[in-house]
Image (cartoon, rainbow, N blue to C red; front, side, top):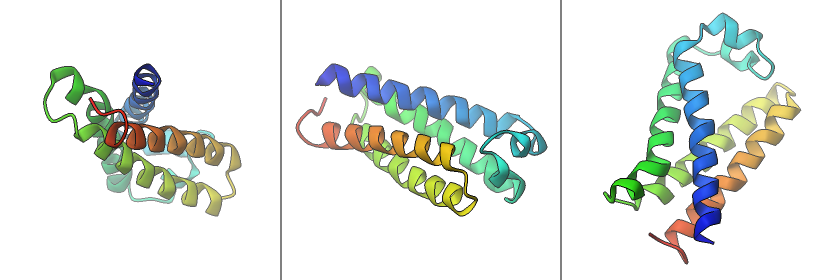
Amino acid sequence: MNIALWIAAALLAVVALVGGVTKTVVPISTLAAAPGGAWTGRTRPAAVRTLGGLELLAALGLVLPPILGIVPVLVPVTALCWVLLMLGAMATHHRLREYPPLALNALYLTLAAFVAWGRSGPYPF
């Protein structure tokens, strides 16, 4: 189970890293033109960049604490925050009738919930 939790956390960290870098570096007009990115054109650029920064922090919070042996409780806390972020993402994509991104967000939510459950309960570090 420990390996499955590490794999789930690593996958989420990669997703968060890619999403965070994209939202903080790529121009908003380019993001808005991408599939599933219409919401970025309707949102203040500062909010998009802030979400990107939060995703970068999530990428770090999912893997670095146990690797460094410093406050590993941050992993389930970060995973729970990722669940909340995905709920917001799912609501946004549902409102815009963007169903493929919504399904992907549901998958990420499920992985994050698995990590939050596993690392806060039966399989802590």
